[in-house]
Structure formats: structure tokens, C-alpha cells
Length: 297
Image (tube, rainbow, N blue to C red):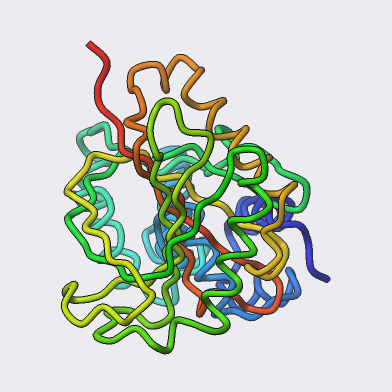
């Protein structure tokens, strides 16, 4: 059974907590969720920026502290209780997680930092999609080549996706020296304060701007501090239509109007979206959206 992405992720997180003492893994969770293990792991890492396996292990170790500190159980029994096959594998994982052995914690009462349960706070549910609050990242310089389109403000949410589909289906094969053939970059540049349109460049990243094909344009994205938003939708990436795009931009604007977002201001002359076509699993697409920012004084 395929859930909406928000419901799917909530279900996975709840299942981990409910079965924390069982031999739970990505294969079990994938079968429970109705998608493949590979795609569940990819989706989880995109959403939470950590691997599913590492998160399960961290949560088991955090939960095991209750038994370690509140009971007199020996380490082998605790290891088996939380799904570790051997005492030594529990000890190795424990020391890697907390920096000390279980014995030291029992003897000294040392305070350690634990991995808390993940949740979906700080997200916007958008129909059959979900938008996550941004990370603040530094994007290095890169080059793109694509076909430039003049997009009126009045119809930008409709025309830009159409231009992207046209480019991906017909033009990308003509671009030489691409760095990642599966990655689509849709770059928007403002045309000026008084203009009533933007320039939109459906494009691919390239190693250099040499040999730009006739009818195409190149652009150099300068190193920039950016807000990076992540979106997961229960649809093909070609189905990012007018309504979906409008809801995404509303969620982005909401961030810049909130208390955290007000620490930054957008440098709105250029921004871009990035889609990995290989991440689509037949159910969910993933998209990243970057906008240059600066700290407010």
C-alpha cells in the first residue's frame, strides 16, 4: 500500500519506535510500507539527511540505556533485547555512538547525548507532497547550458514546467560535457526591477562553457550561501504543474516570513531547482530548490 510521502514517513518513524526491541530493518519497513527497500532508504536519507540503518541503530542504542541504567541485566541480555546478535557487536556500536563503554556509564553515571525520535515538525504538507524547512548551505561555482525562455510573471508557474519538460525530452542530448546526465537544473534569473518577466533556463550542469551548441545559452552560478529546500511528491517529476509549484513557492515564502527565516534575506536575482531523474521510483519524486541568501544585519 503506497502512502502519501508525509504519511509514509510518519508510519516508518512510528513503526521503528513501536518495534524498537525487535529485529527491525529497512527490508521489514519497506514491506510494511509497500515500496522497495532501496527506494525507502533513498527517500529516508533525502528527507532526514541520515541513513535509515544508522537511525534505527541509534534509536536502539538510545533505548537500551533504559535497561542499562535501570536494571541489573547483563550486557548480553541487553544486546539481545534490542536486536543485537552478539554482545561484542552491541559494545562496538555503543562505544561508537556514545564514546564510552556501557560499563563506564554504569559506574560513573556519565551524561551522554542520545538520538531522539525524528518527527515531521517544520514541514509543510502540500497535497500529495511534503516540503521540508531548509538547510543553509554554501553552493560552489558551477556551469550550466540550456535553452533560455522569457517567462512572463503572469504565467510563470505554468510556462516554466512546460519549458522544462520540452528541454528534458528533446534538447538535453545535444549538450556536451555534462557532469551528471540524470540531473535537471531549472535556473531562474530576474530581468530587472521594472520587467514583467523572468528568464528561465532549463539546463544541465557541464564541466565548462566551451562548445555551447547553437540556440543554447550558458550560465555561471557564482559561489553563494543558499537556503536549500527539499520536496517529496507522490507523482512523477513531469507532474510538477501550476498548482504544485504555486504551493511550493507559498511554503518557501512562509519560511522567509517566519522567525527563523527572518534572520536571512533572499538575493532574488537568481535561484534554481534541481531534480535527480534517477531518484524517481515509480511513486515519489524528489526535488531540491536553492535560493541565494545573506544574513540580515
